[in-house]
Length: 465
Ligand SMILES: C[S@@+](CC[C@H](N)C(=O)[O-])C[C@H]1O[C@@H](n2cnc3c(N)ncnc32)[C@H](O)[C@@H]1O
Image (cartoon, rainbow, N blue to C red):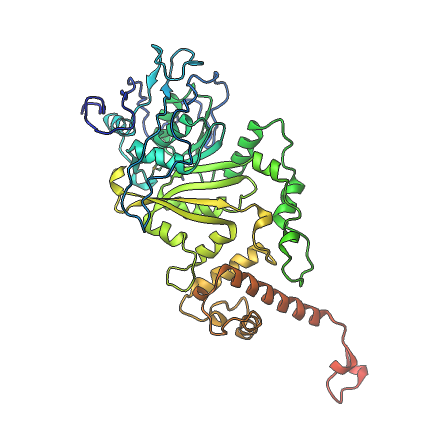
């Protein structure tokens, strides 16, 4: 199979008019073989690198706030978009690129197209693995739209999960971001490591994103980047996560009180990471469970997920069959937004469903709704939705009795026959406080010293033990 190069008219209207295929220097890494330097399951490979050999992006395109060629559920027609000229030159193995932003030194090479990178993979007899959700994006204009929607800019810290071919990675780098990318696949990791070994702006991590310790990796990214700033202290983080101290039966605090204990705005803002990823669909749920609570470290997530799942997850109104525990959990931690639809034809191999880009703007811990216990709140919500057709007073048993739930719903001004799908996030929060209050009152009743009026009638005091 000839190597695919859009040069020569194989792909019209390509965003990189001067595009040439990078010279072949592909590794033939056998699946399962560890590539050099990847001794452990989570080895970062930044160490020992020379300084960057690639050029800063030339800022000649429209600002990142340029209108998106969005294709939303309500706007299925793709609008034409003016594509920015990246001017980023591929410099693997070349001479110094400093001060030569796209001028074309003999050693520099234009960015390879997404489609040629995927084609080269196949030419090297590397098959996409279904088990790892390997459906590679092959359209550079879509990749550009993604990094524009994520508003990635120079010096941003970006975590990418599943770089695979590196096609999204190179667009992130082209915007001047510092990227840490976690790849599970041995073969693709090996190729990336080889191809980007002189790009200091990219740190590759080999491992399973769910198990590799993403929170520590993100903390490391922030600390490495801003050694001039004090690290967020454990106390700051704990205070922010816990929110203001309240008595167990106290009512939810006011917004002003809820703000106490947050890390200072400047420090928090200066230290956050963006997550941008074309995720394998089978890890979306676990990854969101891991990352959504990290609003003290992450500003926003921009991830590609199945179109149908994206529509469900960005729903804001209760009442329908699509309203689930995941909606309450998502809204608890962030503001989700459906950005645009991505045709399945933009991926290779072509999956059975379209994709969509969703942005999750994370709330810092101090801005989340105040609840008696975060874990208890999510347990209540999961239980309530576990049997959707049941009324809440039945579905949350044995956490709470039906009498308790009825009383709590009534105290919140809600229908005592309500089902989980009828409640908003705010109503779940109120309900959790009412149930908590009941438990505290019941607990106080148990601990109260026995009073004479508690004694059964006609029983002599001496028989009490
Ligand atoms: C849908 S492909 C995306 C590839 C590339 N970023 C793109 O946009 O074309 C998903 C990538 O995630 C990798 N992957 C799958 N499961 C993973 C996991 N648990 N942790 C890290 N990477 C994983 C796959 O090997 C693959 O490279």
